[in-house]
Length: 303
Image 1 (tube, rainbow, N blue to C red):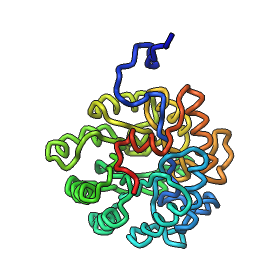
Image 2 (image 1 turned 180 degrees about the vertical axis):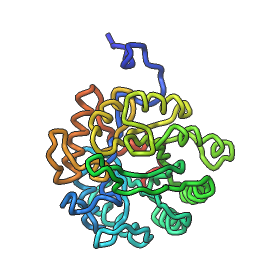
Image 3 (image 1 turned 90 degrees about the vertical axis):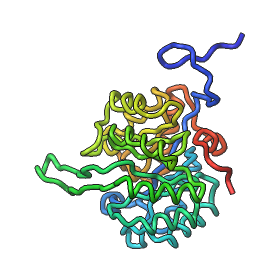
């Protein structure tokens, strides 16, 4: 006799066309802030980033989130560098590419260029302005303190480029207002469902890393949306477990947190993915294959 699947609350699951036991595991390979003084294994060059993408893929990730760097580790938005990263990754594995578009600048000309030219399957899109800061309680001082501006004008420019290139926007929401703020974009028709959200927690200026934060975000987002959690720094593993229990997808990687659950520093993104995959299986779910991730996230077919 077949056994009816239930939700984590014990209620029968409603058919959605998406297997709720499958979770997409994403790996954020390098970011823009962490450096080799903090972690010697942060990748900088296109080849190094591609090697880390392969390690993430081999460990079970279906998607890699990518920032570009110059060879000295400083951030770059050069379309040529993003094109080289795509080329190097695709030589090594079929993992889904997600390019960052985040910048504190108002000018997103380079971002629009590499979206149109490289056409990653996904592009991350920051959904609102916020204080973006890091505070040291030990020193009683800020490590950095800035405003991260993301006006609707800036968002619409990036969305227009994504729509023209057939690139799926991943809506990065640091706070509940960012999630609620999709409404006018949907009304304008520049943002089109089904939507894909990333809920970032534990960044000063955004929502805290709690169960309630994720529950509220999932109530605000439009019905039928996909979502993942991005847990920054300490507490990341608890937040990944929370997302998995609540039915979401997960992201790990050296951009978000440098340490394994036992406290030792990770030597590669692959080590972090191994933990996320094990965690996924331990709560009774399984990591999505590349084909499943493309279907779950409503991505165009691979070229």
